Image (cartoon, rainbow, N blue to C red; front, side, top):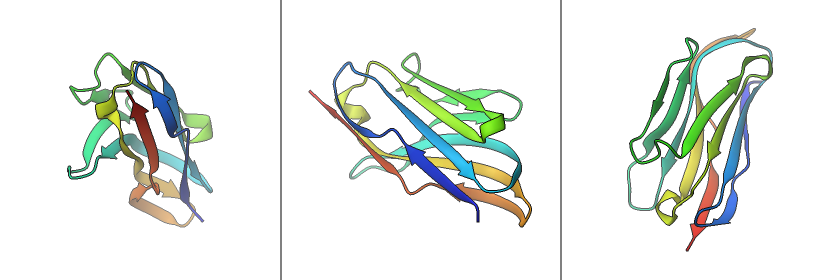
Length: 121
């Protein structure tokens, strides 16, 4: 059974920090890319940060300089370090993994269930 397991969401004050984690559980051979998306009420889901197997990164303009994505390939885990949080960062954050290679086959896209991040003033 392959699942994305997220942790680290919660409530913080503006200017604070959170670290999100996402683990792809199961018998994993490899993952092409992982990333974080977020969706605020009344808004479309947007890409926050992505990290490919070639170590290239992409960040939304709104989080550049504040958020950092990293990975631990041995643990099939991606992290999102969020610093200097703002109220507008409040959203449900979703982990995603692309081209997940497992003993059962290849999953083109897997999503986590989402974790709430709330930043208060």
